[in-house]
Image (cartoon, rainbow, N blue to C red; front, side, top):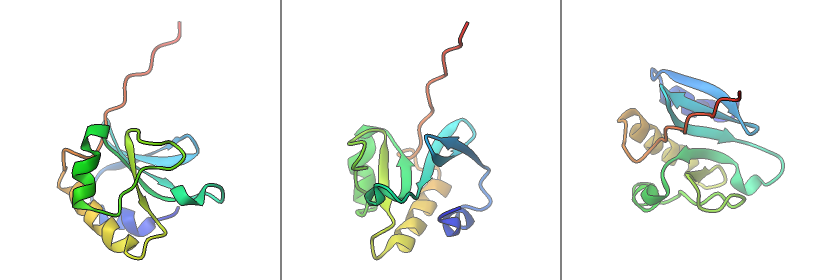
Length: 117
């Protein structure tokens, strides 16, 4: 799995990995917190995707200024910590600290899936 060092930084949080749209996402309880994207196509979006509400983008960017919008999605409920920056591991450590502190700007509770009858 890419970015294993990041998972080590988050130990001992009870992370639950789930496959989502060909990326691996990670939940803490019912909240989706981040995902790993590492692909050969659209490499500009490779890195750690952070789940967050659009209205929290500016506040998160002020905490870690390397965040950017995912180019192939546009501004949605995710920010990207891109792997191609010089200080990727340092910013990943700062992100891990925010997640471990349960920062309210990070994470989304997905809407319940509609049951099919």
